Image (tube, rainbow, N blue to C red; front, top):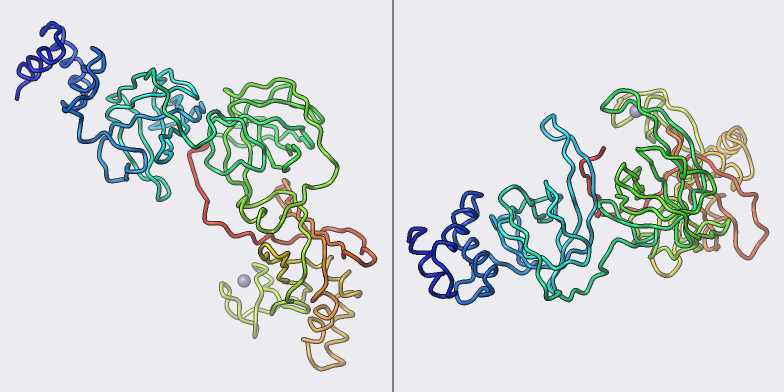
Length: 429
Ligand SMILES: [Zn+2]
């Protein structure tokens, strides 16, 4: 059928002027809208609904697959985030977020401002679908149509961007948080436009503490300030979600009181967050693993070596060190805590030289790990992990034995092993 026949059919169905319908259709076809979607759009405009001529590519959100081609989806806008990115050498302002129906939710990227807001119900016509990190994502471009619907689609998801810090995940767009600025430092970085001043630090609410970066430093963001931040996005920074403020983020005073203590979570909760910045867990040390006590590291890369063989550097002259790799269980889940040199010395009750002496006397290096295991295994500890925002330190644990005299809190470079499969990488400013 040619456009004229389609227009004739539509005009008779809808009882409107054929020329008007034809103009509408041609207008849509010029923007590469497929004929079925164009007809559907014209029907909607004239109050005819989808009827029996619904486009075969109109899908439920749950059915949108990366190979779906171009699709039409009707859903509720959950969030809208605004960001400037450089694409093909040009700066574009894009909108990103999620939309949902009662079958599921999906991320979108809009390359122009279609004017919709969180809470709007929209029919998105002729949207592209691309795959991002294994998930389908809607791509709203020049040939995409967005029509505001008057009947709201009910969805089983929060509508709008308001979240507690603990709910934030890398990849989130258009989020609003209320938090206190706990720490702040000014930094100069080599940005895409040369040297740029940015602010970085730590945000806190009652649920979590997270690092943040303000790419557009503003005076309201000051140490101790209690703020409502609207339209922030989240990306991963050394395994934890990091809050990013852009030129589009609005900052207003808020009332947010936080305690001095790092929020305490169950191990399960902490694992579910996909990585925590500053958190306390309390659990039993199930096991002190191999690779604890008196260990040897490659002088080049710091990796543990056995028989003087580094995986990257081959035969090396290793350096002695102390560490603990412990499995901690609180009944909800387990976490591997890797304690650095300083904390291991405290637990062992001696220096590296003491440990080497003990190993020499016993003619067995394992005596150090055995002694540490005897102190730790089966006992309950409070462990606080705090990641550093500084460039040259990975952060550290401090431990406190529960139900016995607490050891002095201290920190040392170490690692937090909450593994997660939810990493997402996106375009960043
Ligand atoms: Zn090495």
